[in-house]
Length: 304
Ligand SMILES: NC(=O)c1ccc[n+]([C@@H]2O[C@H](COP(=O)([O-])OP(=O)(O)OC[C@H]3O[C@@H](n4cnc5c(N)ncnc54)[C@H](OP(=O)(O)O)[C@@H]3O)[C@@H](O)[C@H]2O)c1
Image 1 (cartoon, rainbow, N blue to C red):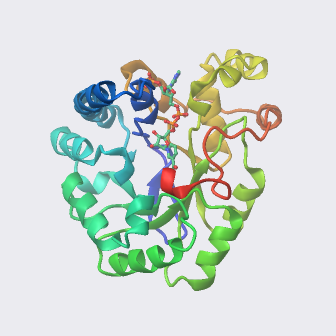
Image 2 (cartoon, rainbow, N blue to C red):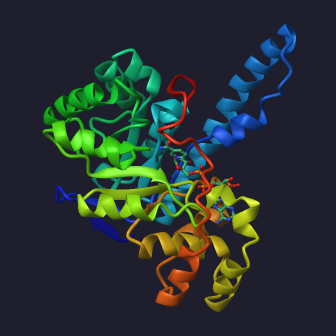
């Protein structure tokens, strides 16, 4: 595993593992709204979430054996206990792992930063987290959230403070008031949405970018892209490996999600080839500024 040095001197793995089950849970939503269907759907989803978390726990254990060291989660994903189980089962030493989690929007609205943090810590079964992040910069709340996170950091429960889904203006607001600077901004980045200006700004402020949905959730527009296919065949790699390599050469940390053993292996097998400058430019030029997730300046935080 290669590492990147953060602006505070701490090290972070150059690739992580995503654990969001949103796509899976969405598939379970029937869309039918009568009472008995809703009740059935509620219990069905609870059962399926347990099944999913059991599968997730096993696949994270496998991932640790393969060499993954960084796990990305959020209190919003309802899977911190499963991740805690995987950490204990894996037998990997705690100091070798980089575990990051986030505070939800609801927890921010309820002014429950401290309680939420300790609830996450307990579910994970840890004494500290390597990164605690704001999941979304909730208008009117995120600066207060940051202050409380700083306190937990000073008390030693958090090794690094980060944010997610921040535009430049959110980061400027934090930088103008903070005592502890954010070392990471986790945002949506992939070849259909390259976010070059934001990445440049983050670099200029010493803020490391992590890319979520790094392979654009493997959607058709990415999967069928002829330029990516051709670059992949040049290197005898898969298209997804080329995209993940593009992130790494851009100095961005991708956190692809998979629970499939083969794809977990492929997503880590990125360090035996180098994309040329010309190939990097070709991938940059695929950009169509197309988001898969919400724009933090144009969304209802109460719905996220
Ligand atoms: N901060 C935020 O607001 C935020 C928002 C979104 C996501 N995230 C984080 O970022 C992580 C990754 O984002 P994401 O889950 O949206 O999207 P993603 O990692 O781009 O794509 C995940 C999808 O791609 C498939 N996949 C993974 N590797 C593959 C490969 N090598 N070949 C073909 N298909 C592959 C997975 O299916 P299989 O499982 O079947 O392999 C899954 O359906 C999340 O899990 C979460 O931890 C954060």
